[in-house]
View (tube, rainbow, N blue to C red):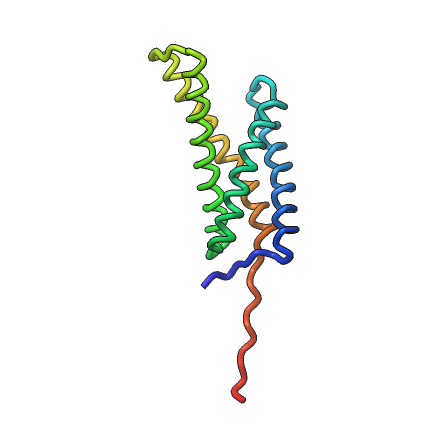
Length: 151
């Protein structure tokens, strides 16, 4: 039996959760890209926010389908969606390079793998506070049922 439920009205809380979490995630990524000196931090933040929208919608759909048993399960389901979306994004980035005609020698493959791995880990780390905020806004503890008096 689950102890969590989606707040009512569902659509309002889900939209609020996605908007607040999306802003937080974009801000976190912008700060991260400034710290590690990535090129074009605004463009990078926009791309990460677009991919974050996909994992947020995926997590909310999963919660509608099957409510998490606890807040830890909720965070883990969000991080699972983040991992899935990040892997798909990495595959698309690889395919884009293939279609551009990039020749994959050992150096290019190693560089792409290392950079892709670091960015994947960064997305998971930066998604942790976002997942805590998302589940905190959208989910609430179910009120205990009143005991039935024999009558």
